[in-house]
Length: 287
Image (cartoon, rainbow, N blue to C red; front, side, top):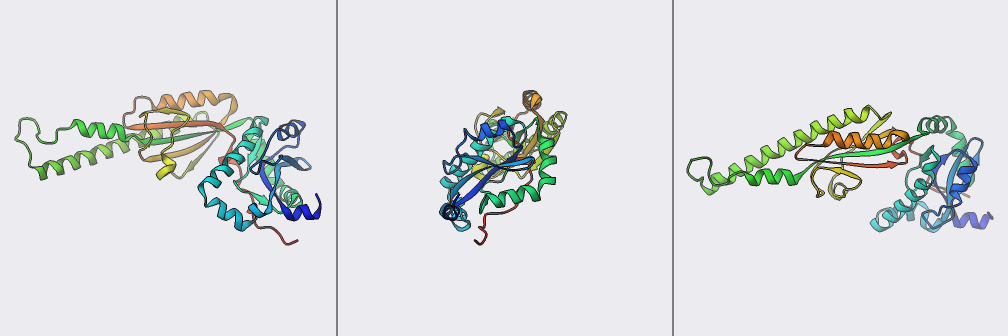
């Protein structure tokens, strides 16, 4: 690449892997976040899957602004994940953080060399493993149904309550119902963690999701058919690839018969949650 081209482009890094003939063939079929041809930067026994991206779109200021726009962020995430997913069948891939950008390929090589003692053990550990996501939610459908079944105006043979007392009684029922549902979901999450731990070799407890992030259902689901509810557990598990379907089945079975609870199991994915966060490198270095 000429000096002029270097100034016009930066290098987007997707993942760290072994430099094998299979890896070279895999990247040759992949297009990246800027529809660029993905390639390998190699140094000894390590390689990075990278692609040239326009500097005007990926230098620090432009990149930060783009990540604040949801359509741009979604497109970037799809492109990034598409490359990582295309490499995942190789068996040992360390996905890098979204929007990991370097000034040039020489900087990528230096990072591989400087962090070799971190990357190699991780590649060894993750070989032959996949990531599964498990989320546990309270199910508002069951909670509301239980509340609606309770009488609002009278109890047993007693006379009807006044409107004010009926309102307070309904609030108490809703509060008790919500507490019972939360406790059931918490017990389910503990049961799932125990069952999953029998097969997984690693677990990362992510922060529970809130708002729109908690609404989308996907993968295998047990519980209510509608999204919603409070996300009380958001875990990632590292599972041997040859036991992936057994893991999924056992987790879903552990959630069966739990009213007021919704469980989602997604995967298998490349092991995003178990790869080291990369060195921050969005700021271009002086030429």
